[in-house]
Amino acid sequence: MSVQIVRHAVLMVLNNFQDAIKASVAPILIGVAVVVGLSMALGTDLRLLLAAASTPGGADTFDETALLNPGSALLILLVMLPLALFILGWVAVTWHRFILLEEYPDPVPAVSGRPIWPYVGKSVGLAVVLMLVFIPLSLVVGLVATPLVMLNEFFGAALAGILLGVVFSYFWLRWALILPAAAIGRPMSMGESWRITKPLSSDIVGVSLLLALLNFALSLVALPFGGGVVGTVLALVVDWFTMMVGLSVLTTLFGHLVEKRALV
Image (cartoon, rainbow, N blue to C red):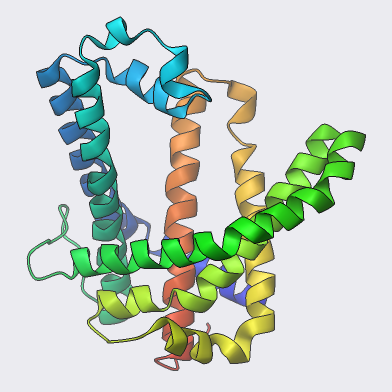
């Protein structure tokens, strides 16, 4: 059933491609516009800021004078985190409600009357719990993978990444039915989600493995093109697709296990 679940999720995106675009593109563009507009108003070079934030050593490895105002840069970063969470919640709630309630999205999805902030709150709470689980597990995987990395750096790192992805996805999928439930206004606890997904626990291991392999394979698509325009565009498309498939897997599990929908 693992293949069937992932296949159903992928087809959910492909067969509803226009609605997937409506559910996601406008919110993402609005978020980008807000950040770009704020950086321009504050006189901060957003490209340098993002490069600094994503570079090991971050603030210690870039010229602060290039940002013109480090305080403004910090303000932008503080705005970006809740904004990114809101945009993700906006997209997710719109997509879950489209599939589960047949609530078709407008070119700019509705915000009023949608439980976006409750969805964000549950997502953050779930992320905190997952971090508490993930940290010790990542140490174990790191110890196991170290000899493999010494033998073959690429293979060892890839295997460690896939293993961590599988573990993370497994716990996420067992607990995260609370998210589509929140999107449609159905109360659900993490314990209830764990109990509901128990009959498919072994299948969810398979789903987690397939998602990790799919994400790894798709991440290789943009590599030959480097950091140029084509590579950047491909990377953004891959990120968008994996996000929508991830949301669709949650929607599929919720529809099948809670609403007793058939996997067709």
